[in-house]
Length: 535
Image 1 (spheres, rainbow, N blue to C red):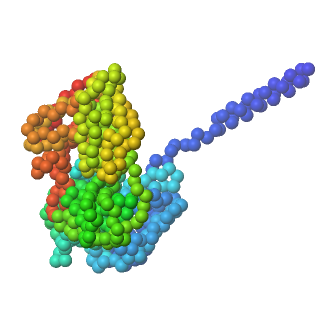
Image 2 (image 1 turned 45 degrees about the horizontal axis):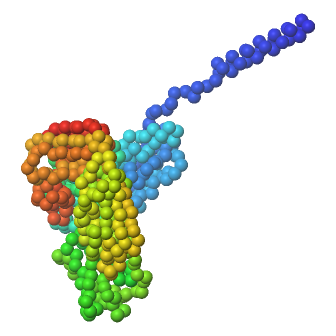
Image 3 (image 1 turned 30 degrees about the horizontal axis):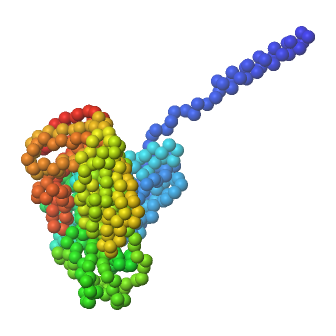
């Protein structure tokens, strides 16, 4: 018995000892590597002159990978043929750049890698590595600096290309559509400032692009542009400001398409204002038309009656400056039947009216066949307003807070362009909140130069509320939904009541916009007073 006890005691001591040793020896992984990779050699050497190589290698002290290279890597001047960069994926102890393009004589080139080079283990970036060489006897060392802002947004988008075009005997403003710039840099994803380095002395046009397809050429339909009105002379000590804006797309009409039995779709680009559509040739007797705009696309719907007996006809589409002629072949399609839907319903704020939209042009409404009552079954007086562009009826009423309303539209109350009617009774309802569920903002404008457009916008710059003032420096926003807003003012220079963007070829800058300092979040039942000093 005593022997068994000693054996148990020995085994227990051994187990405790081994457990203690195991605990003391458990590794904790060590300190996290936070150091960026280190360059140990560059072949040819960085800042080489009389460069003639077709491959560059940069060696590191550890394995590296390249990430987000299409956004991060900026080559100045841009090359017509992209170099081949290894590793495209995976890891390596060196980066290879194989040059496929023919290099210009006596030109300084810069490869700006941004923060795309990272170590393979922890992803620590090598900060803003630049490899520079010259095909001539010297490295150009001048620079142009500045910052980028957005005409309408509080902050500009990331990865803005900032470019210099050499102003010589062959320069024209249209070069931005056709050729790559002489020098280029990028604001990357965290800053709005820029520095175009390694420039030679000369005169330049300074441009910035939000370059959607990354080809360093201005695509009016997709890109934003900024420009300095005057040419700049390098060397310069100036700090340049560039304001990005989206141009209005130039007008263009496209071939029409039959969309219904008596409905033709006319697509376009640019502004619909001023577009006229006319039939060339013989029309049916008592011919009538209506034109409606699609609410979401750049298209006009051309409705007509009666139908054409011919298979084809010609349409003349014009605006103030352009004339287009289109051959159109008619197709036999099903007739549209009248449909009505609520555009605004549910909970309405005090500035919004209940609105109905029709799929066929509307021509008449019988108010006597429409009734609006509140939850207490009290008849509510209403008006009827028609939007002929979007084919909508709105019904303004004096809204009370915390009330619910019911609308009934009897059969044949609404008549369309083809004498069709609503055949069924239509019932709708909407309600209002208590005023205590909203907030109010009073804006005191200091140093105001009228007229001004005052807006509350969301984080994406979408206008939620807007006021126009021609003389009063006090602007009130009442009964607004609780949320976070930004406050901005548009200087309506031409007094047309809307924001006007710029145009590069015409040398027009966008109307100026100022943002107030960040606002408190609007809360229900609170009144806010904002003093906004305009500079």
